[in-house]
Length: 549
Image (cartoon, helix red, strand yellow):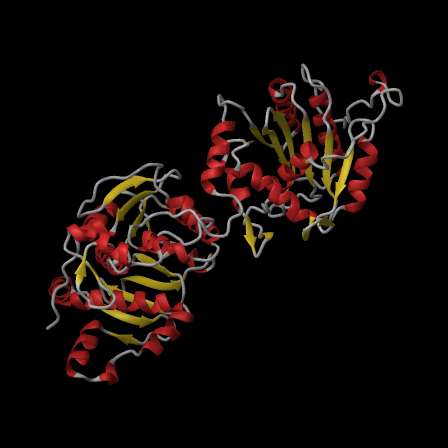
């Protein structure tokens, strides 16, 4: 007879957390029993509600087999209890191929395994085939026709579309987890009784969305506790964390790789050559690292400086209507000081929902610091509207109390060469316009040549690392900057589900170049006699516009 499984203190505590919180996460050291506990929770939910569905999402096939193995083992261990309950409630528990209806009951699995009879056992290949085709279900029958089920699926946006409770396993290793989360949230919002559980250790790459979703508050460091400790992340997710020190208090040790002797967490860490890996997997720390071009901590520092009421207030404007633009221009005029101003414009001429937006940054030099005073984003396929908005921003800079017009406007003309050329002609009476081609080669005496994209990206990252940059304190900017990665010395970026493509990063690096670039080169602004202020072009005004500048 199989021994009854005794859950650990942290597992029991998390099972209570699930009752109190609709969305919660279980962060534990490796091999603590996250998947086992998720299996127990799924089983309880099936027993509690007739006709209920639990969707168990796995990150990849190997983990899918592990989930199935853990859940079936958990059911087997609890089988004695289930037999008694089934007798009273006329219930039975089955493992089912959802398409063919092929059934293998856990009682038969247990007895067959004890008897050494493999003819009635489902092989790992069977599990894998059922998993890959998303046909694998555990069914708990409440009557002959009504059952609850746990459906095991691949953890992808399409697979988690079915309604019910969701258990997402090892989310820190899920590719494009932000897209999965986008698919999950509407399911949870559709019914107040649905729950979503996330289990994981911290991800190895700090650009992974689970890093921001589940990261603890800064300087949160509670004493060890056998049940683990809890916190609410910045994004509002309740988390129970169980570290190696917490588990040790509950009698769950670590073992030496060579001798197998039980050792303390401190000794285990001392012997491990990869401290970052140990800290993620056993200290359950969110280690800053990975391939992101911009450090999360440095971005937080830059945004702390730029928050409203901070030393250098900055603002982010997502423009959807003329009224949004009017309010943004008023704010810009009031908050610019007398420092030198540069503008960077990353072009996009489309308004599709998932396309990348246009982004424009107004950056101001204050002492040695670069202040991204305002960042604008918009989507439009109307060239005249885009020109109108940029023209009015230039006028707002010129209309500040002191300091005068902008030094330079840099436009990324890599993919929009003709439109960028037209824009330069349109603004030549307002500002010196520099068309920047990302693929242009920059020769550096004594150093390898680089292209313009890498040069400007490195300049912006250096400004951030030297703590000389202030940014608007909004999630949009932080997440957009974090999309930019450094791979083999190159800056690369993949668009997210919102269509963002590091556009505010690109507009800010262009603005920084407009502010400080081409040192040693004399920039000659348009002579005042050629186009006196009295006859400067008036702002572009469409019939529907309400612009006051």
